[in-house]
Image 1 (tube, rainbow, N blue to C red):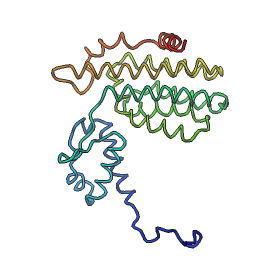
Image 2 (image 1 turned 90 degrees about the vertical axis):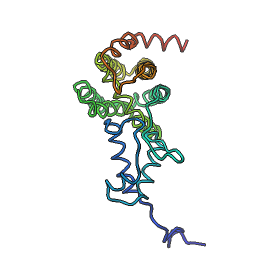
Image 3 (image 1 turned 180 degrees about the horizontal axis):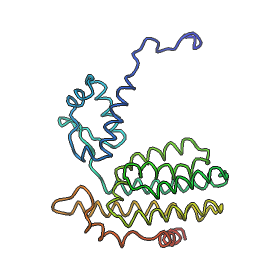
Image 4 (image 1 turned 30 degrees about the vertical axis):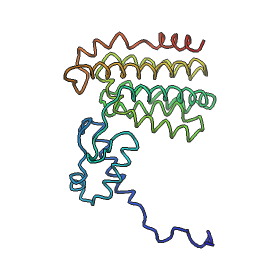
Length: 262
């Protein structure tokens, strides 16, 4: 029997090429998020390997990682490609976030301090000022995660971070609806105000409505875009105008949440 204090049972086994494959996966993920690699674009293993001056092995591992995260799809005899934007996936991501973030917020509120609330306020202000889509995604995630950090639930926070990454491409669609960002920022302010009051039920209802509303907006936009003869890659002004009435205010969403829970 191997003595655990003298040696590891897999001593001598080849170490996985995590650093190289992770670097490639991160670069491809960034290109997808930034729109440099469009939905359904091929991810040619040989071309990627030449670009990074590596063998096919870490590229294959990177593509498998992206596929497991939902960024890519791998088909037999067809190879890998960028995953398409899915209305159903977008809505489901926000439905799951709604449930989990409501839970996390309820756990976090009793543990917030004046220092943590100042940090959340600073991050909310930074998100409100941000106009660059790439930076806004990061600011938005930082705001949300800072709300839940005091919950002291590392596995829950890890799940939420993964969902934020999975939804990055969809969140960017928000910038196709200029009027919606202002509404979203206002909802952030309402959530923060409830957290500062220590009003757990109201804060939970507000964050749930905020996320469900975002998911519904993106779902309807992607559904309508898919029905067009030639679907554009981003929301045109006409589509934004059409979607505007469906971006319900947080107060109306709260009423909806109240009705659903009654």
